[in-house]
Image (cartoon, rainbow, N blue to C red; front, side, top):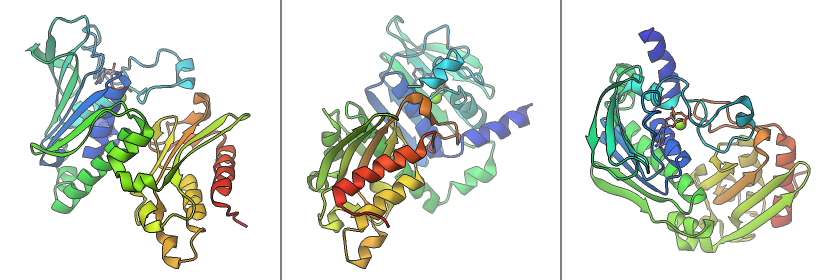
Length: 338
Ligand code: ADP
Ligand code: MG
């Protein structure tokens, strides 16, 4: 059974990036407005996420890391109106199977915080009073200590740097969609990146991408009924100098479906096509636009269960969404694909 647990957990928890994502999403689901993410040795020795969210109720702590425990879904219908990032109750338990995990938490009702040490199967093995304020701090030590091949794979300097960049990109994506969020990323005790709480998406874009980039973006809004689709965001102004509104990597194209950062090949393709078609210059063809595109559809028309990391979503009305995006892009850039 230990082997089965290790195997299934290693499929849910695949990288430092993936741990950071799961922990951050738990914090955001807990209503956190402040997040401190600390990594040591690129996260391989330590990943710590501290939030100021609502904390974990004492009665939930014995089960919090047990497989399939979630405080977010109570019945099948809840899945249809999903508003939280998490819903499977798999992350915390799976992390316990591949690392050493401790959780410090305090709710509004608790007088003091408590630190819990968890074992391989997610059970509490010890607990003691702690001194932190309201919220939750999860520390993950020695990631993949029992998966030496994977640990080795992530240990090369090149891989480590790539992962740290991916963590930063992930934080950017959440920083943009959650303006009210205060975020810091610390690596080996050095602040790598931080963002203060700001008022709106535009200010969040300025804080993450810089004022000069945002000066070349246009706020856009497009709404349609039946099926209900709302598109909001910031797009390069038509005709803007492409060196200031795009990059050679897709890392500045931020696409969200119901507030979830996603990778969506077809949407990405459309964005690129319409954006680059404005430029006669061939070198514009391999550029990716700097875009924030927030797509909102009824919760029951998305399936985020496609991949364990929930970065790929299945849109039940994909064609309608693609058409809406296309109509919108045509009105913005005036280019029509065949
Ligand atoms: P899920 O997010 O799918 O519910 P997880 O395994 O990620 O499952 O977390 C299990 C449970 O632990 C959550 O449902 C929640 O009740 C609790 N939890 C985990 N992290 C936090 C946090 N940072 N703040 C408050 N509750 C948390
Ligand atoms: Mg979760």
